[in-house]
Length: 372
Image: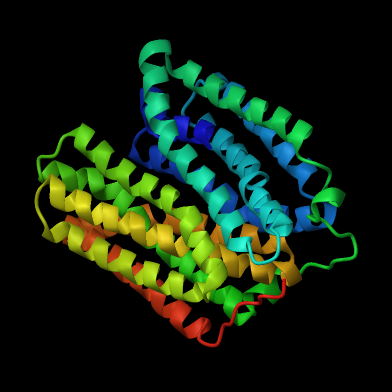
């Protein structure tokens, strides 16, 4: 995840340097999540049939090869295809690793395991951008891509050496038949989590995309924006284990509800306050809210995945998040043009809150399975 974080903020710069205009830039950025949305459910079903470790290894090798493809793309248009393949590699790694962790989790410690792994994901995404900017400033753009590839290759070697075969990690059973995509979408509780993930990504994407514009109106510096976003992301990361432990002890849906509604309300307040410290406080509260809700959702997903097919369900919820990240900038851009910047955050807040309502309705009678 550090490798992915390294190139995350550099892709727009790289594309513009190669002459990409606004539309092409949007396609380049969106193509990664489009690929994840389309390919994720299929990769999940493949993992439930073939196993976890081999798919993760293939995905990490593909990740490593992406670093070379990025540097070989001498036209901005080619970056679309590279990003599509990068998205395909991504869904072979992160949701499958989540599925493996959920399979391996001891009894009554699913929340702890999922929270710990999600902490690693968030820390990697938080560390990567600062490291990527430093590498680019001192060694050039290509060095940032090669660093991403080297980290992926190192990770692949560590996976091969240290992660046992699927038969030893309880992460793959040939006699287990995973649910079809249709069956998953017709399951009320699973559908509630999927809808919530989509709406949360659609709403929160507005914050991460348009906060720099809001900061510009408030005369904040770029370094202040960096501090605000870092505080948000790192707080999510550091709350994962504690929230995961809590999700093992109480009904995890209450964590999802509390965090989702709290996140929606903090986003609503952002365009109506002024100054660095008030925006920072709201982002700290938003990070805390997400830090509470994420492990709860992962525990529910993990418990359902034991009967539905762990990787199949994990990949679909990940695809729902990716689809939300596609919708968010498009919808927010339209709202910005029609009504102005404050309404981007108002609508983003509304989407998150609707996700909370969806959880309230779909998971009304949900009780955790403590016998897994």
